Length: 573
Ligand code: F6P
Image (tube, helix red, strand yellow):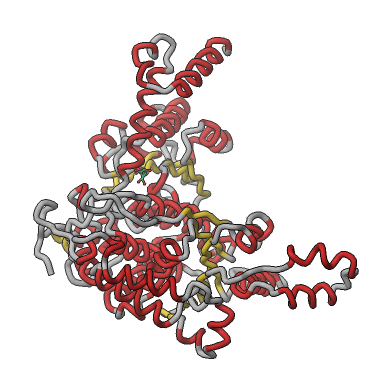
């Protein structure tokens, strides 16, 4: 559609972005529709249409999306598809895959799809340059490194095989590898095991100190993952790790015990990690979209490169579906539009991510960064205020743990909170009836949220339970559930590397679709920068004699806290 453009030439498409979103015909039509059907209850929608489940669900291989338990009708979906067309989701999708600079504020492509492109496929270009030769070379180097570590051919400075990997990174350079490794490890228990994995992501020294306390320098390998190699937290942890290693084995040992994944090769070299141990990261790969790159090296080391490539293949499968399927049968498009409906028309400020799979316990955190760092923006691509709600607050916990923590608020709280329930039909284990019980809870929760419980049903339940009639009146209002609370159910045949790849790519493209509708750039994160700059300044000001000179720049709260901190430091040895 567009040739290769630079940022200044690249013009976002879609008429929504020329006018204000709320004054566009597509948005106004949805507003009117919402007003007309505001009183609709999902119970009635199910009663009126016996095919609702078939009509409001989609399947891609082993991954199934049921979106029937949302407050939508066929007309709602059709108006939402009109909105996607008006925003030119199809054009933006083509531009993304064509490697156009759709990350407009940084003048970069966002071509993470190339990282999971099969190696025998056609070239893929980022701003006019074929990236596939680099991707090919990366996969070969990852396989060689993972195999060498797993087989024991990679040895430490004293000739011992590697028994433990300490991965140091944060945000997009941490969440993906940990989440995927956790999710898939039990499935592949019978495969020859890789080394033990430790993930360090917090600058709080407790985390790295605790990890190092249990490790032996001779058999420990560090991976420092940082796209910029300037992230203070990661570099501080990496320096602590290096000092620990050098103290035990001398500075020559760094070459055998450190690997870097970074786009800043100069900073890596300055740190002392040799080029052979350095994996490149390109500017067309955003941090929270980078698990498919060498950032995923811990996955290949822990589970084998074949597993990592299955994970890539699953994501590629979703990429093809996203590119080829018509909008009204397109899983990421449907999931994205349902999210826009829930956020902006039903007023849901949050999305609960509820995996009924212990392996996926890292998924809520992973998706929290993906959604909130991508779409937590208040300006559109042209710098104008966005008039509507954007990224919801993402939170969650695996079922059934979450049920005993926050589901009360999902069922009866004053805020409407949309939910994504995620479950595998087949478990990683065959222990007793655990999996059936887990799935029964998953199904029960989605139905209870949808149906609620009427007064008559609450009375009948109390009678069944033998509640004394004197107590019934008092309990009744508390036992009524209004229901009508929206949820998606995403069910996999099982969560293996392939379906997990599909699932993560599904959410990536969902976030992209929403960004296009809201007219924002999901690939930058300027909001994180200001806090980082201020932290660097305050660190300097916390030095014994240095802060008075800057004091006028802070509010009295910050000044008071700095003073209290300094006074405490002065008292402590
Ligand atoms: O949190 C801000 C951020 O820039 C994320 O986007 C990124 O994933 C993370 O920091 C880590 O950045 P880096 O890989 O450069 O250390």
